[in-house]
Length: 347
Image 1 (spheres, helix red, strand yellow):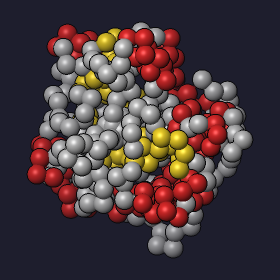
Image 2 (image 1 turned 120 degrees about the vertical axis):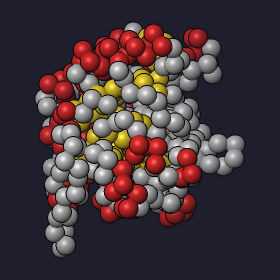
Image 3 (image 1 turned 135 degrees about the vertical axis):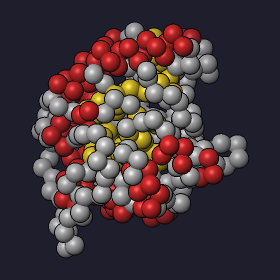
């Protein structure tokens, strides 16, 4: 959720007792954005097994897209060890610093401004020519009021918009299982990522299945909501891979969705926030931290690559997180909660 991602914890904004509750609620959140004072968008970042409904990719009269040309030095996804995560404040609105950085993979927003100024194919091609893979960030379980689809959605299909995320004013969870959400928002975003030549998509807010208010769930319990989210991810995967077979599908957080049939097969990797440090250089020690790590390890052991991101600034904490990435065989990055700059890779 973010063009200026919001991390999963509101560090320093709440009293200690309130923060403890907030951390539990946001354990599986992704990053996201919220509008800044200047009006610029700012992005921000256990269920039981159940069968997800079968999904199929719509037929494409044009046939699959040819795989994008790639540098001979581009690593296979499973060999990636360093990555960059920046969702806003690209210098000059360009990706030059991302291209020049010492990373093997980069995650950037689908749009340079979080609105409708989408990155072009020639811009993504220049980054990929350096040997990097590039993933397009967007949300699948929520929508911010500064996104280009929001005004028409509010006007013509307002019943799709559910409760506002209290931690991120202006962002609402949605009825993501409704066919209109696919038709009006998700398919267009996937098409844009394919058109621009991204290597794949970085899908935020699958945690909507836990956070959407039950009043908007149309009688679904959390298990059914989880099944519907797993089905949406599987649909995105089938649709994109029918058009570009090597296209990468990487959801952020909610690794427990692996328990739903079809989910693990549909994804290529998992991105996880705050496995080791919560925003503000605080070690992640809660029970849910261990649960997230266990589910992430299970996906790793199933052959999925892991992109791990922690928010820390103290040198000792950065070194600690980097050491954990190496031990766990995760690709890791330690950065700032605002996701508005590049930080050095782990050494």
